[in-house]
Length: 168
Ligand SMILES: [Fe+2]
Ligand SMILES: [Fe+2]
Image (cartoon, rainbow, N blue to C red; front, side, top):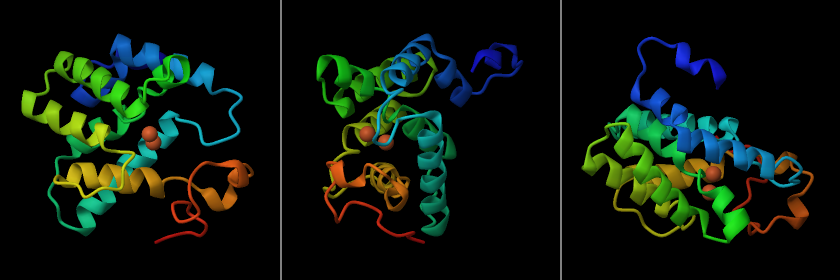
């Protein structure tokens, strides 16, 4: 992400991942998970989630803003480092960190709250009021290739939650 500062016209999604707090937390997280045997929380995961959410959006004609989808997906696990180090559940830490970054990137209060709500609810299967929250939950789960995972037997996901085959 080093060459981002050279982009002339910076959109709000680029501003999110260029934000000093995002960059700091992302780097700390990558370093902390370097030797993790379970799924990592990388830019690859965040973009997989964003793109699956956008597919749901198209398939179900939900008309969600692409920008909000990407904002939610890019930020949803940004609290993972706090969970590793301070034991703060990452959906709570992530919602708080997202609020700071979204405000600094000029998102409206309403959009900020929607993204924060989606992040705060992304670990629970409970019914979602907002499609943004529902899609984040579903895409986050679908993005994981459990059928290929060597650590699957030690993973704390239930068997029902795991993607033991390619779902399409
Ligand atoms: Fe998560
Ligand atoms: Fe995730």
